[in-house]
Image (cartoon, rainbow, N blue to C red; front, side, top):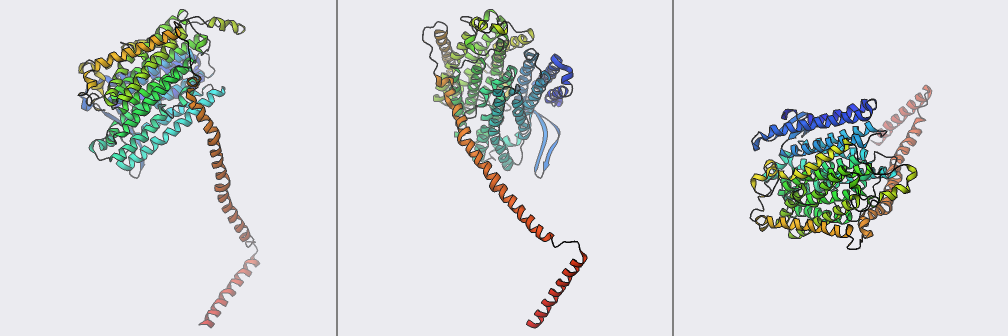
Length: 637
């Protein structure tokens, strides 16, 4: 089966091609089922490859399939090669698995859309690109997928492009990601110049052996981190992700849960030997940016009223947690939280989509309330996702978040405090969301009366094709933490599985106070989560305190507005000046040279009259000039 791993990305690509050619004829819902079966087949092959690899010794769990020689230019030899190892298989498992559930959900959510088949074409193409990203054997194949998910995210976010906000959001995502991509490209150039190859194995081995200078390793690592900040929405390049909510809800779940936003975390983990070979301050930079992003986004989520915007800023915050883990050397914890986050965040986004579908496309939580009575399955599964992200045991998010906090405490006490505050805020704003949407008074009654002319707006439960993925994801959000429990080596399955790719995560903290007292830190995490939930209930359910949501938080500390003003003001002026220079100076010089040559040629052209007598005269004059030159030369001699 490992020899057939190339089928994992090819099957979604085939699904997108089928919908490209026959999509309109297949129509709704058959085009959706084609895309779903293609992704599900990819998941099945990934599962079979996983079990085959599980039967191998740990040192043998790496298999490369070269599809063909891609680039041969001088010393640059790059194959389009697929790498199956513990890290890529973990990524492929949850990418294909959760994408299959999202495809299934989208069949119901997108029912009746005029561009139904085109939507699933884009979804399959997105999954293909993401799988090329995580399965690539070298940086260039990964970059192919990296750019592919960027392009597909533009298509999907701006899918309803007749809305100006959706069109703008798509462009914003595309441009912001291009800024980060500059870092990845520069890192590739530097890696090839230093090592002579783009293969992960050779680059990481040069870092392990000490052949790569620390200054070079630091430059490569931080440049890759610039790209990761773009794809994984870290400060200051997070701007595109909240606006990406303009896309259909399945797109939000696909981008924000299991695929695109995790690309940066995956890349930094894949290149972890580079970070180990770099200067000590380089990982600290990553950890600080991750902690700052986590805290910043959590404060913003507290004051959002759009049901999807809360989850969007929550995603930015949780990604910050993952980078905090990467910067602390806890690569297994980062991947662990990435997987559990994929479970509960996909559940929450799809749950929010179910609410929006049942509320007739209403997204303002202030117009909801008491929906658990009319949407019981959606409410029950959403509440499981809330408990998981809030860090309540025994749900999956508790174990992965606690794992990160353990390593952060051992690495940097100040960042640990930031992590705790972020965890408190996460429990607070997610409880606020659950209360506003599913509890309290039914505010949609008034809303229905206001819009009675447009038909009955009474909420309703979603169809079974949308509820089935919610149930599956809710189960995974409960049991997903079992892959990595803090009760000894026998329970650290994920760590043992990833050991051939990354250094054992517990190795560098076993002798610290944090490791020896990890159960005490676990209790602290539980108390923090309980405090956040209790505070939110006191404010939004019991009304014990007056609700104060500062405008500055609702406007995301005005960072987005400031960036927009800079781009629209000095930025636009700078761009216009550059365009003027290009049009008037650069083009002026080029056009001036052309005009000069044309003028000279026009003058010379007159000599070429086409008359034989004129040419004879010129020859005669030329002969006289030559003769005169010889006579003068003879006289002078």
